[in-house]
Image (tube, rainbow, N blue to C red; front, side):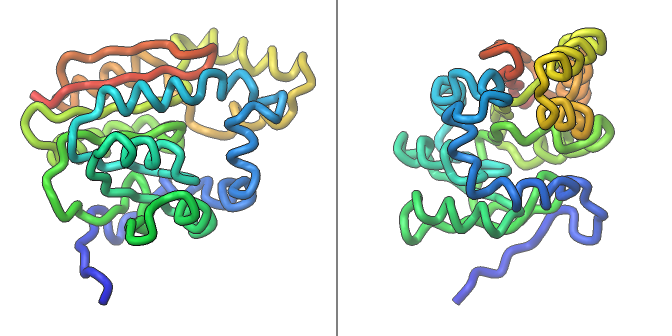
Length: 228
């Protein structure tokens, strides 16, 4: 018998799934990308294992993970004996993740905006390479939701591509074009990659303190905040 779960964000036109078709096409190749086998994305996924390990080390006991993809971070969290409430919108990604994770592990269909309410208390909310799928306005909104989901002193810990300024963002696109990396340039233009100051302010406005940002490679930062 399937569990009956209530959803947050039901009825909302969720732009968290705006790029779902991209992930559906990318699902089978995703693990090859994170291993650096595509030269266009090699720097994006540089030190990928260290990035995931950093999230695991910072996480508490009861974790909610958004956009688990093929389950790489999820697997590490479970190996560290965390309780994980996993959410992923792509059926293809869920199927691939199921091949890595315990047979009885549940992956819920949901995204950053529309997702089942966890069945237990959550002290950490994590994601990797996902948060940029939301517009700045949507980022502001979901961070306030996440604050309400967390127990006192709980954390959000995300790894994602950030830019310190619009200038650095545009320079990265120009560099991709000059290198002949058309797919990377298209990706950078298409998705909602945020500026670090915007994310900092959004976390603060959502009620998070002790904000920290650590650059892990040329593209990706691990950033976190603690609930007041």
